[in-house]
Length: 180
Image (tube, rainbow, N blue to C red):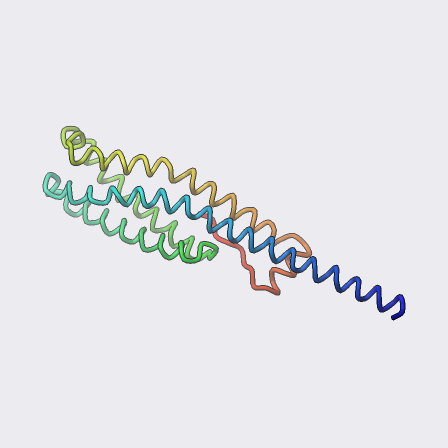
């Protein structure tokens, strides 16, 4: 073997090790996004425990059945979008769908909670108060979980833009993840 062949072989070995290392780094960041989603999912699960609130309010707020029904529908849509995003948390279109569902849920829930604030006795009742507290606690935890997720997404997306990792990402099919 001559010096030129050894140099080519050495270059190929370095390139192979870089490619394996780069791929492993991108996979670790993708897994970090999935782990960050788990924090969001925990907050959403806590929020889901407050879903019976709509049933508890059905009779006392019978005149506002439309608002309660809109809230139930928005909550159901948000849960389906969250489940879809949870399956593949790196897909931008699923993140966008979840964001849209969360915006609709925020609008519907603000209406229901405004109605609940007008009836303070109902809000303090033994059946409603724990559900309201669980909802509000989950809603307070959710922005922090979302920020943690978005930080993981930002690190992943930044790594995809760095040369020469960008070439490897294209070769292996890595795409930017969506922020929530």
